[in-house]
Length: 258
Image 1 (cartoon, rainbow, N blue to C red):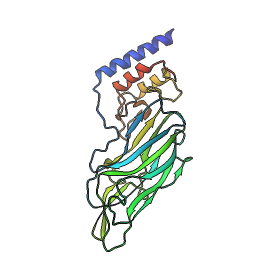
Image 2 (image 1 turned 30 degrees about the vertical axis):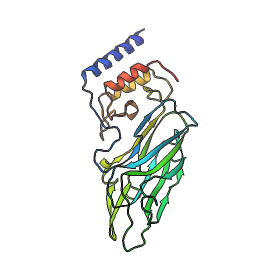
Image 3 (image 1 turned 30 degrees about the horizontal axis):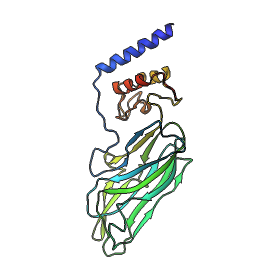
Image 4 (image 1 turned 180 degrees about the horizontal axis):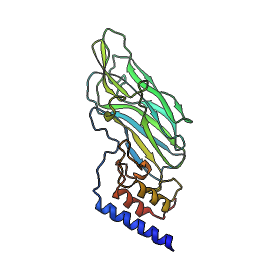
């Protein structure tokens, strides 16, 4: 009986705290600076996406330069939730955009054990004396996954000097970076997939007191580096804050099981 009273009291206190807390508005995964490269849809929360359904994202840029020559990126994902199937060239660097130029598309390779897509790239084949170029905005590539399990997964651009996300332009016989993901993280937008029941923090297919405790511990935290108790699985609406919106979402699903 005491445990039930404690649970009710905790729930009420958290809910009241949520009402008194300003709901900080965060950015989902849309980059804060243009031009950018991002995953679209930037986030997907859908319990109906179950194995073995397919899930597709596009890698797009809003860059409207008329001197685009090359792009490349690599991705990571959760291999217990998603399984990579295919990568298809988008409409940014194609023969249709520049019929006089030859282009090369390198689709990369999935490692569905490690949860990676290796370096994927497209470029106009440089034959000199000047680079062939195209114009944006457009789609770099379309990536298809198969839903493998229950849970959540980032669809995250690799950030290191060897496989960073890059969009290159060219003027005459010289190329230059328009976007460099390793040093310009504000221009890169990762994706997020979840088929979990909203409010289910630990992934056991139900929303219960354990999940409520997790949200209580993470309450009023944000995704900024070094913040104690931050838990991305408690950020149900993906606004980079755990606040009253997430608590309300959890309360609405409390006791549900799928």
